[in-house]
Length: 296
Image (cartoon, rainbow, N blue to C red; front, side, top):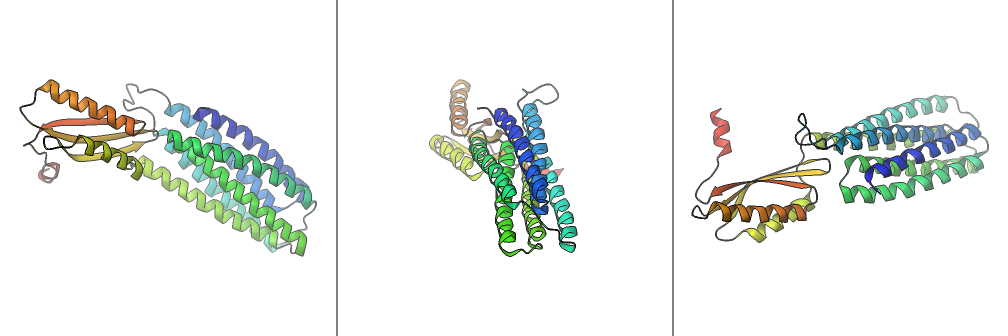
């Protein structure tokens, strides 16, 4: 399945869990189950926005976007993070009102059963989506998967808390649990916004990718070839690397180009989605970017 197919499936699952959790809230009048249902509603909005952004990111480069549209995925994770934060704050407000005025909860057995079913659906799809996001290095898919896991843990906490309400009769436990759920939601939202910001600011390649790049460069380095001024950045599923490749000045242009082409192919094979820009320089020539910057 493609990334977009997983996101379409996540929209369907989000709709199903909203129905289940809303039904659980309606049966029980539990504020913690209402909080759980609200998070699923946010998950639906996030999944739909992520699907739109992945569709945009898949578009080929054009005159206005010569490097492609890959960064659109970061807008998805940032948007979902903001939604999660807003949902968490809303849950805290509602729980505070219920904490000041505790209300009885009813039919907890039915509510717990519905919450467990929705959690199983979210957990199964979230696990599959997380694996797919690592395979395709999709920020939007990863954000959606992590939100689903947050939903799973939220539902698990709600179920345990409601079991506690059934066992003790402590009505204040329900809104207190909703507040704890909200704090966990806020934490996840902040992490998504932070990850989105890092991506939009051209974050360097991750450690594993850099290790793969360095391994290839070590294979091509010898007494006649060396590398410097290595710079990397990521843009969604696409990665970019710029570097200088020094070789003997007496080599023919054809020979130098052949070596550079072989290196580019090796780098792209080592890191999926990588695009390399390699500048050829004679061994005795250095580029001093810092000095140029100081003169300006």
